[in-house]
Image (cartoon, rainbow, N blue to C red; front, side, top):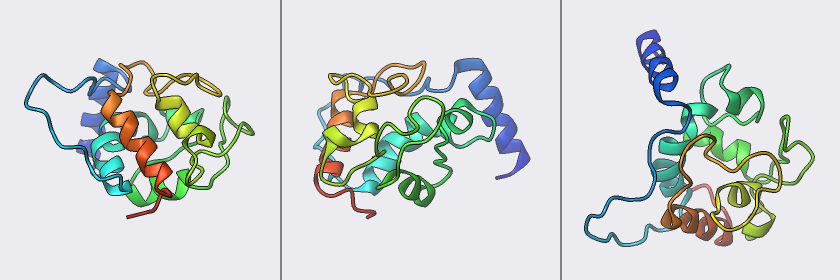
Length: 148
C-alpha cells in the first residue's frame, strides 16, 4: 500500500473513528439477499466495516484483537477454524466454526441479538451491522464458511 493511501486512511480514521462507515441500509429500493459466500461477506461487510481497525498496524483490531484482515485471503485464514486471540477474546472460542454460527465469535460479536462472548460488540465504536449483514454472516457460517 502506498504511503499516500496509508496517510489518507490514517486521517480518515482519526477524524471519524474505526468503524464510522455503514449502518443500516438507506431507504432505497429493496435489494435481493446476497449469496452467502465469503467473497460477499468480505466485500459487503468486512471491507467496509472491519478493515479500518483490522488492517493498520497499531490500530486496536490488530493490537488488542490480534486479527489481521489486510486482504480477503488474510481475513479468511485468520477467521475460519482459528482460536480467538487477543486481549479480551483469547481462549474464549473459535472465531468462525463452520456450520455453527452460535459457536462462532465473529457471528456473536456482530449479531444484533446475541451478547458478545468476549470484549465489545463489533464494529467497535460504530453502529451495529444491519440485520441483513448479520444474516449474511450467519448464512455463510451455516453453509460451511467456505472460502469462495
